Image (tube, rainbow, N blue to C red):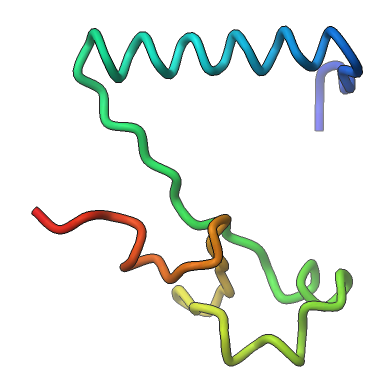
Length: 83
């Protein structure tokens, strides 16, 4: 990994979140963008290291040999409204 690595705390974190929300709102409301929250993709090593595997494996979705789980606890097909 290259470049600076930093963490924001307190008001810095609040400001960054506010800027993110502002830009999401601006582009979805005024420019016709569709906001999407795709499922996170992780590998077996990461899931095992955090204690999610093997006990939760049957609740996860596999994509071409990779294990995925969604940020909102629903399956990938449930995240997008029909039509």
